[in-house]
Picture (cartoon, rainbow, N blue to C red):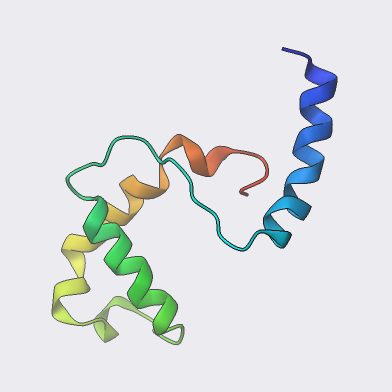
Length: 83
């Protein structure tokens, strides 16, 4: 693989993502806990002023955080244009 060419492509990713109408990504095989992680992210996006876990609905409290942490450990999130 040509490292110089790859570096040039990575530089373009910000503009590509910015102009995209939709983005579909492959995060790997679905894990048992992925749905809980996505539900938690949706809730947090809709309720950005939640200051601590006590303000979360009971079904989004303690049991959901390990799922969210595991989801964010997927290799996709380590790509330089995602950070």
